[in-house]
Amino acid sequence: MTKITHAVIPVAGFGTRMLPLSKSVPKELLPLGNRPAIHYVVEEAIAAGIKHIVLVGHAQKSAIENYFDTNAELDHQLRQKGKDALADSLNWLPKDVSVSMIRQGKALGLGHAVLAARPIIGDNDFAVLLPDVVLDPFTTDSQSDNLAFMIKQFADDRHSQILVDQVADEDVHKYGIAKLSQDHDLATQNDNTSENMSFKVAGFVEKPSLDKAPSRLAVVGRYVFSNQIFDYLAHTTASVGGEIQLTDAIDALISQYGVNVTTMRGDSYDAGDMHSYMQAFIYFAQQQLDNN
Image (cartoon, rainbow, N blue to C red; front, side, top):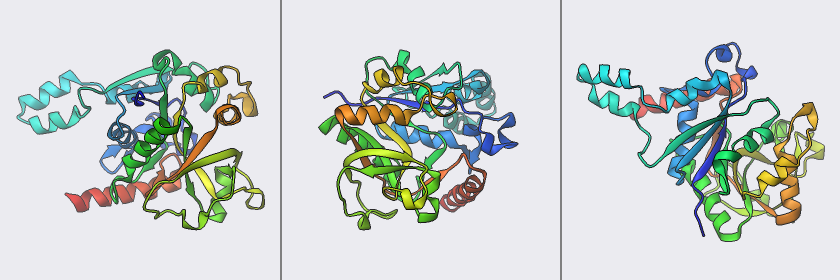
C-alpha cells in the first residue's frame, strides 16, 4: 500500500492570541529558542517520512514560504565571509523534500483551509499538522514517532487517525474531546505512556464542560486522513461563525468509514497562546543551551 508522503500545514490564521507579536511577524515564525515554531513542525513531518509539504496561507504570510526557500544573496554573502557551515545550516531541507504554498483565499475555517490544499494533494492520502502545536523534540524520539505511528496504522487498517492526549479536568473545556466507541482503560493513558495506542472513536465534542465531557482525551493537532475527507469537506455547510468545520467532515467520515484516535507519546506545547508560548520558549531555549 502506498505510504503517505504529503502533509498539509494551515498557516493562514492571523494569530490574534499572539498580538502584538503577530502584528507584522507570522505567529508561525515566532521563535522557540533559536528556531521558529514551524521549523520544528516541518522537521517532525520530514522525520515521519513526509516528502511534500503544502502550506495553506494568505497574502501576508509569504515570509513563511521564504523561510523554506534559499536566499541566494544571503548564502553568497555568508560564503564570501567563510561562514560555509552557517550557510549550510540555513539550507536544511533534504533534497527530496519540497514545500509548496497555496492561498486559502477566504478565512472560512480549518476545514476550508484543508480543502484549499486539494489542488496540490490531488488523489493522495495525507497528514495535517497544526503549526500552533509543537511536540517536544528533546526528551524522547516521540516527536516524529507519533506521526509515524499514525501513518503506519492508517496503512494497516485504512482508518483515518487523530492524535489525542489526556488533559487535566480544568483544561477539558479548551479542547475538542473524543467520544469513544467502546469502553477503554484510560487509567494508563497519560502524558508519560511508553507506547502509542490506536482505537475507534465515535465522535468529538467541541470544548465541553467537564460534566459533559465524554472522556479526557483531547485532540492534539495531528491528523492522518484518507483522501475521502476532501469530498466531505466540499459538501460541508458553514456552521459556527460562517466557517467550514473540520470536525463536521470528520463526523461524516466516522459514520461512513470509521476513524481512530491515536494516543500521544511525549509532551506538546501550544505555541499559539501567549502564556503557553512563553513557557515553551523558555523550555526550548534552555534545552538548546544545555545541549550546546
